[in-house]
Image (cartoon, rainbow, N blue to C red):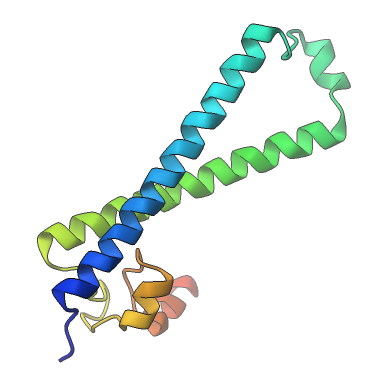
Length: 125
């Protein structure tokens, strides 16, 4: 059974921490942007204005919300992975108990399943 070396785990942990930080900074910046817009009066109040809001702006805002949801989900996955590192269960598939190959973890450090198990999970097995 090929377990991750401490060095590999520390490399992956650094990746996870960096990803977490970058999402958190992005979230802080988008909150800052919003409060800046509100204080400069860019965001106009009143229903009428929302109806008149350009399609492009609305689409952009919806995309931002989608990205925020994706970020929230990703943040959760990252925190789970960091927790598994603490617990010593990192790098093991939550469904099969098999080792997750280092190459996969390198690409997706928050992966909690082997590629095969993830595929089954996504298909709803």
